[in-house]
Length: 271
Image (cartoon, rainbow, N blue to C red; front, side, top):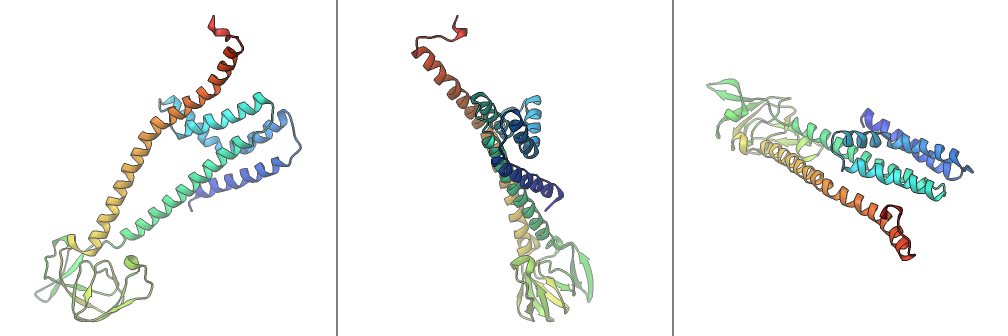
């Protein structure tokens, strides 16, 4: 959990505690409004700031604007009706921020998992040529080449063990914490970490077709798909938000006008 997430969680907990306490507080009048504004601003001041910045920058209809209008409208209705019930405004902002916190936490955890997964990418491969080891780029290794993986190194390319035996750490690939033992004649996948003995491996695939390369490609493709989804949601919000806003405005204005005309009265601006 990042420092920002911890701060947001603290704000949510304090605001929720204040909201519960105010539900039992025998306070009325302007003081009640002031007391309810404390948890409201505590948990939602950043939403109001983002909504104001969006209006200033011409990006009016977004989720921040919608939340600001909904909660401030609830406060205005409570003031107009003189009910003193500001709980809904604070609760809506509170639940919205709880949802945002869970989303930020999940995204942060996914990013950390992806960062850990990216550690399986090998930096080099030791190719055995004329009895000597040559450190080369894994992408330059041809199928059928003999590579040597020493203790502590990552297996760069899929292959078959020619000589040697060792234990492999496969946790980055499978999540299994128990090391896997391999010996001559057994297949070995890239991305594992050699723990003990020296392994001579004959490659059966090129780096681009190996297990580690395919995993990294899936991660990158998943990230790009997520970006397209987020872009769609942003475009959808630009249409959805004004519809909700003007629809709510119409529901608030039209019924009183209908009642006025039904009573034979006309609004002041009809002149």
